[in-house]
Image (cartoon, rainbow, N blue to C red; front, side, top):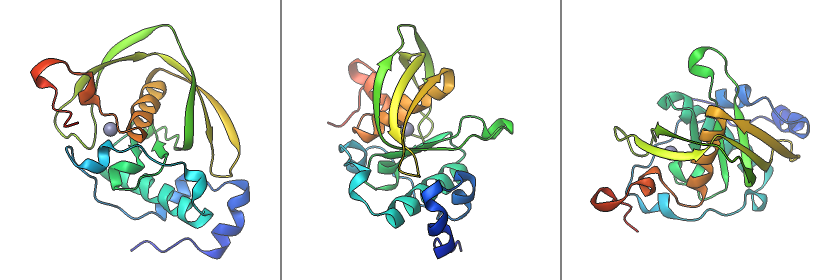
Length: 185
Ligand SMILES: [Zn+2]
């Protein structure tokens, strides 16, 4: 079983821990499946959590995402109502780039949009075509507590928007119209 974060890790935290190392310290958590009501709530700012809680949550999200074969995972998907998600668009192609994103705020959306089928670990076997901007600018906090502005494009922009939606209780099913809409609101 993974061990809890050690004191040594906490001491390194002020520089921001390596997300890849964090993933090895995470616990694999059950992923909630739609229509679980926790997937529909608006999450609270991570700023209200202590450091140990935040880093363990980030570690659990990373470990669970990799275990499930996903490219992104948001806290409400493991039953935690906090504004934090993780993403790694390239690990399946051998180019891992894990990101931990906390209290994100989308500052700007690019004008160009694209419609692509998205999968969601909480809605297995039911991809949905979603139209989203191709580029975004997003302000967030990293694991060192530093504010960052990320400019994301393509698959990273898409994953970030999908995961940010989770923090507000939005799911890809909401992109459907008519009788297919089973949003359960
Ligand atoms: Zn999802």
